[in-house]
Amino acid sequence: MGKGQPESFPDLSEEEWNDILALAKIQTVTGLVYQGAATLPPSVEVPESVSLQLMLESSRIKSRSLEILSALKEIFAILREKGFHPQVLKGPSVARMYPHPELRESGDLDIFLPPSEYGEAVFVLGDPSFTLPDGSVHYNWKGVDVDLHRHYFDLHTGEENLPPVPSPYAVLVLLSSHILKHCMGPGIGLRQMCDMAMAYDFFSGNSAKGSDNRGAASDNPLDRELLLRYYEKAGILKWNTLLSSFIKEYLGGNGYPFTDPDGKEEELPSPSFLMESILKGGNFGHFDAERESAIHGGAFRRKLNTLWLYLKKMPFSLKYAPSEFWSEFRELALGNLRKKDIL
Amino acid sequence: MKLSDQYSLIEFRGNHLLVRKGKGQGSVSLDKGLQVNGSFAFLWRRFKGVDFSGKDIVDALVSEYEISEEEASSAATDIIGLWRSYGMIVE
Image (cartoon, rainbow over all chains, first blue to last red; front, side):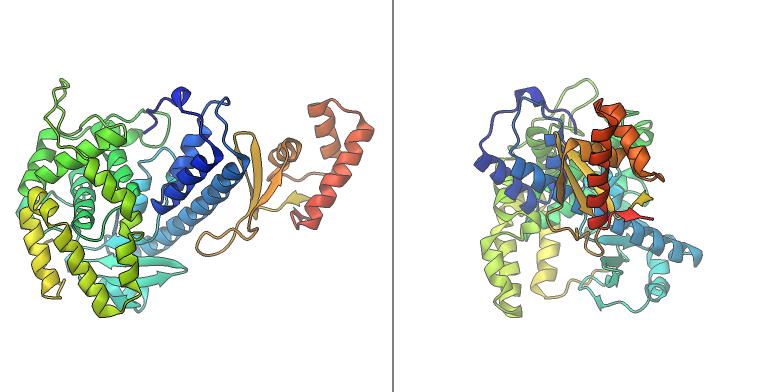
């Protein structure tokens, strides 16, 4: 969010720099580290070997971002020409909130289509490679993994409790609940937390105008009270106090949306255990040793491991999103992740 | 002649790396990139996207580095040779 103090950056050894690089890769934030390191004063030494790796990685990330954008444009053109109304979920729609969107690492493309259009649209893009447990379909579009979704939100609550789609409130509820779901199970990485921080910056009107392409959204800051009501109705208000606390403690946030315009803030819970979990598991928990061993153990062992992860996180889930936890756990235990149409 | 648009120059804290755009998965064909010096980077930035001749490179070097035309000619020959050897020139 560009609010650090580069002049107070400590001197680091080459080993420490390599540790930062390794951590950045695990958390899929290398592009952000590259951008941050580029702003350090000349007096701070960055080892040449690290500089070269950062340059190579940032080039790879930019190249990949372009490929994904290109796939997005092609797919949207095809769908819109047929009269459909696709929307991007996460990924590129969040990247645009960053000062340098091309440096925000993207893995795949998630596209939402309203349920009334979904069935017909699925075969417009050709035959899907496979269907996911929640009914989404997967394609490989010229080297880019694309998932087509009929559900915008991954929440077990009625449509009346959710914000309208599309809207900035919908984006924030989506991003927040996405992080929650991963925290309840496999794990989440730093990139998604950065996404949430950037989204708050973008929609709350805090982002600097004119320095990048984010000015437009900050002209109409969100109604903070309305956002809090949406969180409450969706059953994720308490979870969001923890999320905002994390963003405030580690990512330079100001406690939004739990800080009112006068600067008065609610007491937020300590986010340290969340950071421990992120550091242990990496991007979506992929680097958790327990999970890694289960991946190689066959389908049954993987399912058992997933169930175990949810049980392990139960104290957290029951504290911060109990109703969502029970709904999710019930579906997982029954081995059926198909949902009723929520939206 | 022109510089190939298959390469991009990255600058980072005084270091310069030339990478080749790959296909699929955002891959970089030149595995570790090509580390280049400041004068290479200056010329790359100066002539990227435009038609140029050897004389143009000589003039740019003389102007930027205040060296003799003889020195600049020798340097221009070297750099064009390097570019051709890596397939960075498009006629």
